[in-house]
Length: 158
Image (cartoon, rainbow, N blue to C red; front, side, top):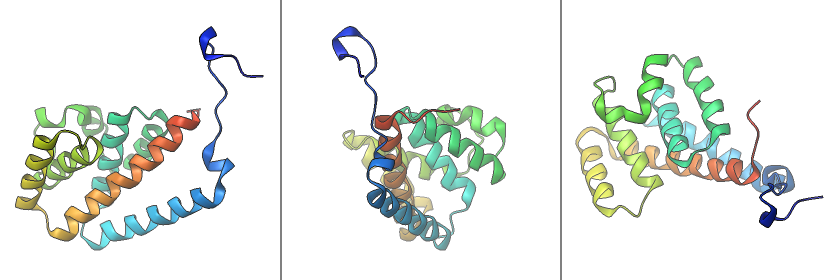
């Protein structure tokens, strides 16, 4: 039995991926198509995982942070760069392409900051092809969807 929010106890969550498996499978298929789109645009797996991680940091999704940290390490990312990702603007550890992708991913995740969005898009235009811009936005949109599913379901990190 679930406790009332007024008591301060957490209410048991529905794992929406399990409750609606057909919708979740469609999102997984979208994610697979986005991964192929990113590869076709010349974006390597490390960059895709950096975008997944940065968006998950902004959204506070522990489950996705766990999953994509492991994926980034498997793809060859270093612990040093992972440890500084939250402050990527203050380091020289990321390439111009990675910096543009991270800024564009942040602007996709927090679209209410119009000035940051314009600046991110302008920076991306300087170093990214149109295919890469599109792919980065799709990666950010997709991980944002997975973040919401995991956050609202309270998927545990074990």
